[in-house]
Length: 626
Image 1 (spheres, rainbow, N blue to C red):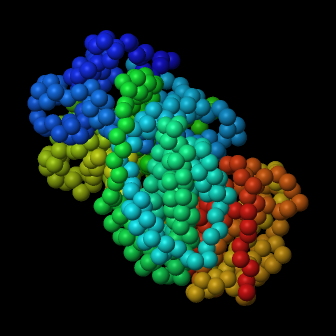
Image 2 (image 1 turned 135 degrees about the vertical axis):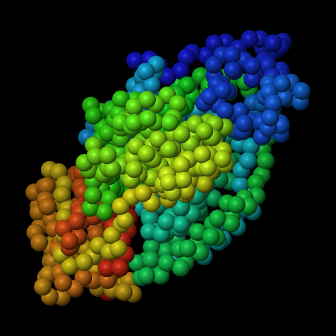
Image 3 (image 1 turned 60 degrees about the vertical axis):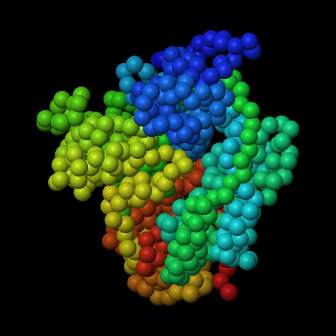
């Protein structure tokens, strides 16, 4: 196997102190050493730097640096600002890999295989990737050029508090752990895990608040030693207030939604958007050493940035569909992205099994795209069963890490993929902009199935990508709590005794009953729900069956019985929901992560709405009926 970047060769000395003095000299050296590939992967980087420096949009970039007399220091600052989306991409991708590892029996040995082309094939142990991400983050975060002001943070928090319940201060163990890391001097991986509201716009708004908390945590931790204590004093309070208030708002808005009142969730999304659109900032000027740039461009992740972008896009596809619906396929402790085709995941959506492939090759007669002869091979394809049928494709996603690709090349790729997958939606996700003329070059009959998504990267509006993926999926069930619905709990040998609980709620949201082993209910008379069997020696299934008159809504909970000390997180528990028509709606798997939690709040089912997945690990159980 080859490595994923060449060794850095020493930069030439052009001044008495051993540093390059002009931006033109620095840029020329980076290009000559192969660290910047301005004609391919780094078109976007170059154009972003051009905009930051206020250079004209046309003409030789190198000559513009000379004419404007841009210093090496100014170019350094512009470069580090331009690679911030890549920095965020690495953190998000690491969080994705950690989720994959958490589902393995041996969590210590996940390997990532990047094999997108014949010239470079790389195996990266997860811990090596983690070390590179931390080193990258530590280096790039030394320059915090733009940050939220105290007034802006206070205004955002004030509006957020209007949506939080006054008495709802319960936090899951995982969220508490994240807060302890973020405010206690450790770098958290990924944003804080909030409960789901169940309304997409509100969930996306709260995700942005959590992303801001992550940004503040990184700024505090990665600030210089002499500033760190002061930085934690300022940032720590905002981190705690933002995250706890967002969690309380999510809980309150979810309760509103369960009662059939989604209005406040939608107004929250609008209110949060206003703050992020105007975002007043403070500026902080810091001296950047050229050695910082050498440090990060020396890391292997930079040499494989095209593969990183493709893998990050995979993580966004999974997030859009839902981790709770997804089985990631790891073979011999390796998650592989291969040019030869890889079955990456199976998704359970609306009672169907869908299959996500990387580099899935499909025959196509007379393709129009350059380099294609008798087949197409997009980056990702989502397929129905049977996967080999010509019309099985639901979704095609092609990644382009270019700032200014040719419109004709983009159009030809979309036309070939739409022709080769005649029932699929085709998404072209580009790191940079897509020429506006592209859509007009695609045959008119194919255009309705093609979505051109430019600037698909962290820091931009990714909701369009998420929405486009979800629109390609089979339609969700309008309701799951119908007569004949079966909820089944299964787990491994230990803990021996897990128990399935179902909270029944009326239309006002009040708890009317809790069905479990000690209160099994009856399926043919009130409460029209029955717990079938108490399994005390592992595996299950424990089942709850819904009768002819379902309640308005019902929450699924799982409890580790106190007599067994084995942590709940080691149970590999899963809850399967099969509706009254015999369709398997969901399979929800317990997150495998270190925690003292003894309760798993799984999901809410409703007579009038699609399921809402909570996926919370808690130390306390459900409320008892009044």
